[in-house]
Image 1 (cartoon, helix red, strand yellow):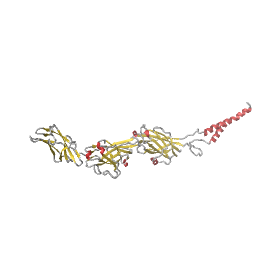
Image 2: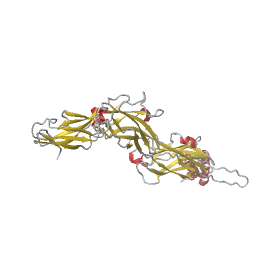
Image 3: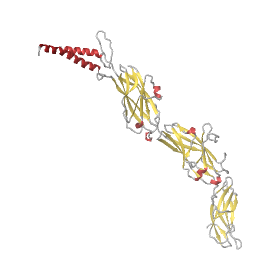
Image 4: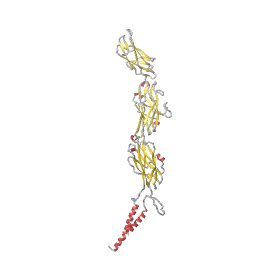
Length: 174
Length: 318
């Protein structure tokens, strides 16, 4: 008796709660024997980051772009999750600020012009992950703009150096 | 326990179970702390390498090495040297430019002015009537650049025309010289600085040169005629005459000898030297003179000797 009441309570509670709150959705039409397929989330870099060849100098910014493709089956919001030097920190890397943005209307051409970053970070202090203002539909692409700036106060030892780095992007389900 | 009590408990048991199950499931389903999973695509790396610029600049000049030798004070046509300076940005960053002068402490530098202008479209052969910087002395440290030439793109150069002028007469500064160096400094930001020096360029003020080797020939005297000497030398280019001074050039000349070819000569006796007694050595200074710029050479000293006999004679150096 008690078990039956508990079961009824569960059923009623589920009904009252309005269904599940899971964000994961996939759709399938059941005809006859129903087949449920889960969605997938994946992205790929289909065009690597290419920066302008002009070198950095105090007060200057160099810009570039990359293309990210949503290779999964659900829309994804792109997000910057990491920024790291490949080599050793030096006078140049210590003063670089990296900016990233994207958007539905962003193209490689717009990335080459000055833009306001949606996410900024430095190699000195790790920045928190940050979402970019773009949602990429499954099978679609997004252009990601990247800028690197050094301030007018960049020290003299920052001259004539290079800094290799990795910017990490992921995609998160809305 | 009565029958009714037992019946009541039985009737409340299912209700409690229902309420408990409902509450747990409902709260779990509606709570924000409930399942809110996101699917996240595996992060992908974007890699690149960024380089910083280099700074380097060079300076050179042509046409500014000169010798001032005209007669008058500076005018629009006299005692002017014109040339050009090329500042080449050999680095990879744009630079703002400032110029300065070094190695310029020689006294004559305070009597030479320099002006600059942008030679684009007009060249450096003539000083334009407008667009010329205010004159500064070669002895100054700062050399103001024309406003249009205060920056240079990477891997580019700018050409700055220059004119220098002697501000005094040649005679007043004769024989003096200065070898200044133009230093160009390029800056970007507050800390990136580079500079380059031109080769020194000599600016001197003309002075007629000294005579070369002086040949002394004795003219022996007799019991009644005092012995003399004849001094001779090769003529000096540009000289119009020569002056002879007793002791030093600072004393008044006691003779002027005109230019002659192939040899200039003059004979000197004791009377010329104002000798009234026996002296062991009498220095005579021979200086070249020219009238074009009004200059006189420092002079060459010949130490003549005197002899009591015959009479009061003059002899050549030992």
